[in-house]
Image (cartoon, rainbow, N blue to C red; front, side, top):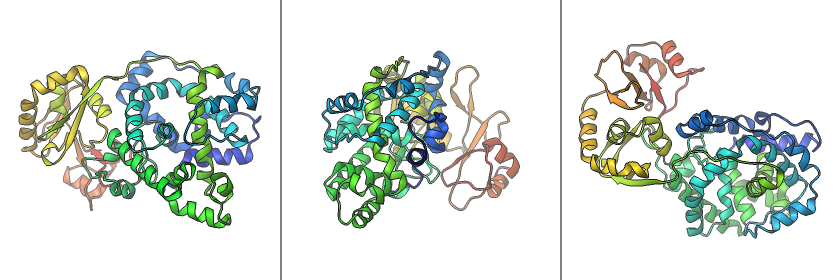
Amino acid sequence: MTKQNKTLVVVLSLILSILPLGAKAQSDAEIMGNNYSQAYDSLMRTFYMQKYANQHHRHAYEDVVEAFEHVPDSVIVRRIASMHTVFPLNYNEEVRAYIRLYLKIMSKKLDVMLTLSEFYHPMFEEVLTRYDVPDELKYLTIVESAMNPQATSRVGAAGLWQFMYSTGKLYGLEVNSVVDDRRDPYKSTVAAARYLRDLYGVFNDWTLAIAAYNCGPGNINKGIARSGGKTSFWEIYPYLPRETRGYIPALIATIYVMNFYNDHGLKATSFDYPIQTDTITLHDDALFCHVSKATGVSIPELEALNPQYRAEYIPGASGNYTLCLPQNKMHAFITNIDSVYTWTRDSLSRKPIVVTAAKGSGKMGKGKNNGGGGTRYHVVKKGESLSSIARKYGTTVKALKKKNKIKGDKVNVGQKLRVK
């Protein structure tokens, strides 16, 4: 998939071109780039991550990078070789530089990445294995999105695997104002595995396939042609886009650090995450507010577990849509499933739907059409603008921009705006 805004690798490549290994360390934002930093910051605002932030102090190991300078190359080569990967983990000066940077980055993010790995990796591994994709490519989601299913790049790539709209549709991912399968952890992983396998079928080389995942097969073919027909990533390296030149070293560094962080003085603590979840296919529509009422699972938690639904609404009557819940809440949902469907049908018959937060519970309830205490949302449709939406709800463009922290005048199709 062509993703022109892989800021992570662009910025890292730029740093490597001008910054010697012994130079002053940069800030995380400078190293990772705005897109990656925003993805991580967005991740930390989700339900489970906020619980983590409230329960634990962030740790930092300022001596990690300095200590790394004294680790011999032979030690790193031996460690990499011990992993026995199908995808060749080449080691050179550029990879070493990325490892150094990632050790600093992970000194602050390791707890989160390891906990999310515990949650996502069993599913990643099952899907990748099914499609004959190397297991180690599960680490691409760290490079792509900071393992945040809600991550969105400036150019519109979305989800754990950062699919663009067109590539996602090509691989069967539904994207509309209600559902965005690019954010569905399972469906997007299947699509990524299929796409990576197809790219391998084109180049017969996993390193080139991964590079093509970043910049598109066309750019890889151009690099091959400009190199005089060479077919190795490192041979065509000078002829590739700058972001792609950094993409493979960044992935190798991630794989190394996530496997050998203990050997570099990094320690991690665990925190609560719903490792035990269950999924059920719905046969009728369901609003999150009514799922919450039936199960006691809060709206933010439902959003964290079901990031593919953009309007707190599951259109179960019109297709094969699922709901993910903590395993210990599934029985309550099944017991009350008919009530959830009934409540939802009643709500959907009254337009527009207004949801309000119940005091102290975090649950959502139904409000009246013109209720004074409700929070009302509007999903932007094709052809709508801030001015037309403001007129519809009897408010002003200025008020809409303030409520939704919008700086410019543009809104996107599918964007959810608070209008009251």
